[in-house]
Amino acid sequence: MDELVNASGSAPLASLSEDQQLTLSGTWTLAYFHAIRQQLNAHDAKNIESLSLETVDQLDTAAAQLLIEWFGSERMQQQADRLPSQRRQLILSVIDALAVVASAPEIAPRRWLQRRADSLARLGQLMTALVHQQLYLLGFLGVVLTALGRSIWRPGRWRLTATVAHIHQTGLNAVPIVALLTFMVGAVVAFLGATVLTTFGATIYTVNLVVFSFLREFGVLLAAIMLAGRTASAFTAQLGAMKSNEEIDALRTQGLDPIELLVLPRVIALWISLPLLAFIGTLSGMLGGAVVGAVSLDIPFTQFWQIVERDISVRHLWVGLSKAPLFALVIAIIGCAEGFKVSGSAQSVGERTTSSVVQSIFMVILLDALAALYFMQMGW
Amino acid sequence: MNNTVIRVDNLENRFGTTVVHQGLDLTLLRGEILGVVGGSGTGKSVLLRSIVGLKPIDDGDIHVFGQRLTALDRRQRAALERRFGVLFQQGALYSSLNLLENVALPLVEHTPLSRHEAEGIARMKLALVGLPARAASQMPAALSGGMIKRAALARALALDPDVLFLDEPTAGLDPISAARFDQLLLTLRDALGFSVFLVTHDLDTLYSVCDRVAVLARKQVLIADTLENVAATQDDWIQDYFHGPRGRAAYANMKENR
Image (cartoon, rainbow over all chains, first blue to last red; front, side, top):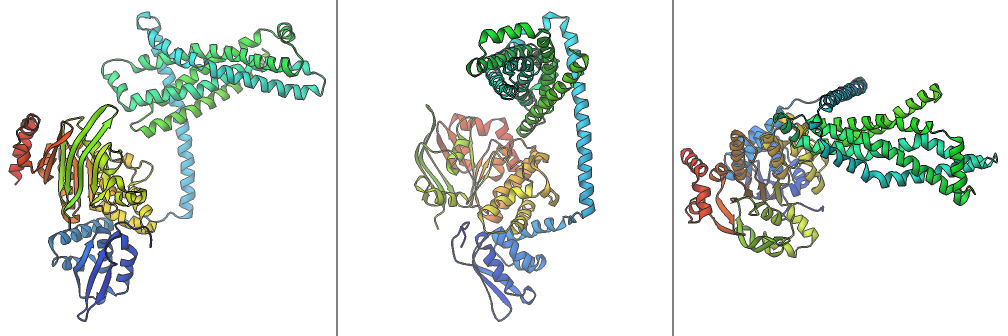
């Protein structure tokens, strides 16, 4: 027998006496659910005149439910009148509860065509949600920019302490991870380049490959992706926790602008941090390439540096870094906007945080691709 | 049959160097509703958590149905805990399941019932606590506070427990919902015959449903007795609690209703 709940007492038994009275005995509880049903189904309820429950030593709601469903509510109600008070109340409560259950309309199973229509409707909902999301982000951007416009002329209202604290968290604390990551990617790119270029006897162009890719793309892109994962999620979680704790509503009721107090310092901090991190990432990536060059490609540091100075214009650095403020704005806006969308529960904070990371990484890569096209067409 | 369901002897609970309980004794009798009161931070919830096994106790003994809690192995303990139903303060409904699945979960996991049979019982339990039939398919996030408490009660009752632990069941409910919840608790106790360990701050609940009241203060149970006897005890805190303005109002209410 299975691991039973309250497995105690003797098995339930229903025995028929000559005057069509069914005498129940033993333990009528959830633990003996199947045994009870078996006992009851052995008899035809229609032929039973009355029930005797005196010899039942335990009766719980689950067993009462089976009994009522088998015997019928109305007949059971008559039987219950003869029982001691507690049992009668139990049976009457279950009868009432079953009446409520029975009153619920049956939900018809969906047909094939309806299910297809449902999936179409879901697609439509998804699309409108996407459009609303973009409109909401644009709206949020507008609100942040007007708040910036209002406070930028009044240095008294600059939140210097908060901004510096956020620069510390989002910028300074991210330096080691960004530097390490770009260093490793730089080394990988150098190895890749060397593998391909050796076949043409052009190993030395590995230098150009590494430096070009990091100046124009990888330095800023890797830093931005790191911050999208690290900072956008943190912003959403921080603001989301405040939202669900009604702190943001508290600010509003005190006549304070949460955008100015909470969002602006974060946006500005990221604006300052990301270009710096992108610069560090670029240097560190080039260093990774240079180390691989010196160790395994016979390109000493001095030669590496000479090629950089001779062949590569500083313009590429500006092209790369020019994208950083845009990425920073996108990451900060998405992170904060998602935080403001949190409603109530802790579960919502988790959902919004996931959404903010996915969105900001997606937007960063999309914008980077568009920027690459633009710069190529402009010949920069 | 022995009438004591839970016996706590000389219980001690500590958090680091902070002693919450010391030499605490308490009994819960079969079929009674025991109200546990005390100021904030006197360890009412800690006591509840110790008995249901969520907090390991530091010293003393807890006997449940005559079995010593600390002497049981994991299987025995799990079997024992299935005879408990716990209603947490915030309801603690599983947020990813709808109400029907919330109530059916313990039935499916702990009994040989099929999902269909379990859902049949779960529907009945939801109706038993006074929820409308359409609530079964709703998610916990869509419910009001009163409905969450009821649904959580239905889940606590899923396995027809012998003891029900309620942690401030009426906190955060409006007076009408709270009064209905009290009434529901009384009706169910009379019908199903379980014992109730009720932690509360709500004086109206104390006056309207509790058979006995235990007062927690100074790391111990000061007194556990009928409400009249407790209210008559000469102790500053008890006097303030039961004879302050709120206590007097609740008392007057009870007199009126009887």
